[in-house]
Image (tube, rainbow, N blue to C red):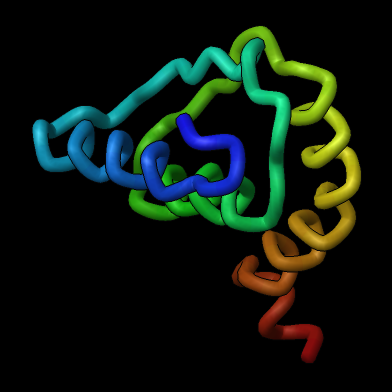
Length: 87
């Protein structure tokens, strides 16, 4: 995968989805560069009703996920059925 683009990962996941794959284990041990594009690709897969597990998380991936965790929790909570009743 290019160090500056999540496009190859997005293409690989789209191909797997087209082939009917519903669950993936993604080894991220060699991911050295991460950005919001990478995170968007990781978020896209489960939103389509599929399962994704990240194995061997590199330091870069762990830091990205930790930094994004509060915002991801807020988005998940905002989309919950009980959140709509509290608005």
